[in-house]
Image (cartoon, rainbow, N blue to C red; front, side):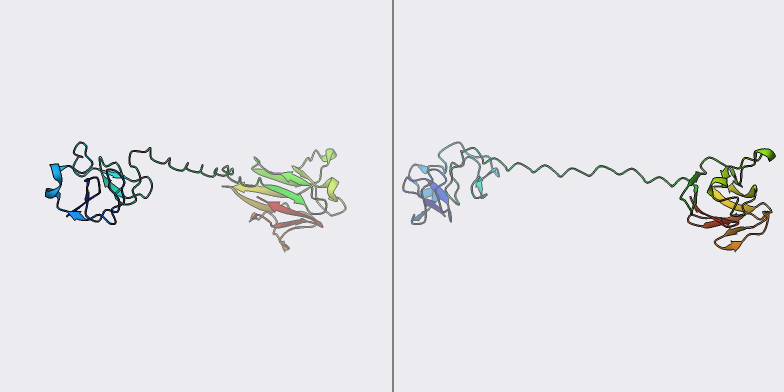
Length: 208
């Protein structure tokens, strides 16, 4: 079955508007395709390619290729399609944060927050400087209460073994403590980040 508009254009059964002239078809009487005078083809133009469709820019309905008006809403199919809305620019990605580097190993004097960098050293001597005895420890606690605090000239050592720091008392007079535990002389003991080291009465904090 087909529907003819008042101009005699054929339209598929159920069409709301003529796909040739856009005339509303609500009141049009259906007619057999074979009964149309002159055997007019729908659209009055070249026969559309089988299976090809045109999407209505107004309502989005599919229409046969070559039709001039949408059979669903009557909108012109020859008008330029409505421009697609501009895609919003994607939000900029936050700048990649640099990977947090491991904290450089260090000793911090708790009394005054003085810091001693341990990076790149495989052995660190902790004590008090004594030019007379030609003793120059890597960590000199003389300016940090070392003499009054009972720190020996060569009090303790920090050793590095496969990346692990070890604390070793050097037969000091007033002993070496790790987290308040007294160390036996010449016995390397592992230390970890945040551990407290006390030489006599001078406290330090290990970070690394």
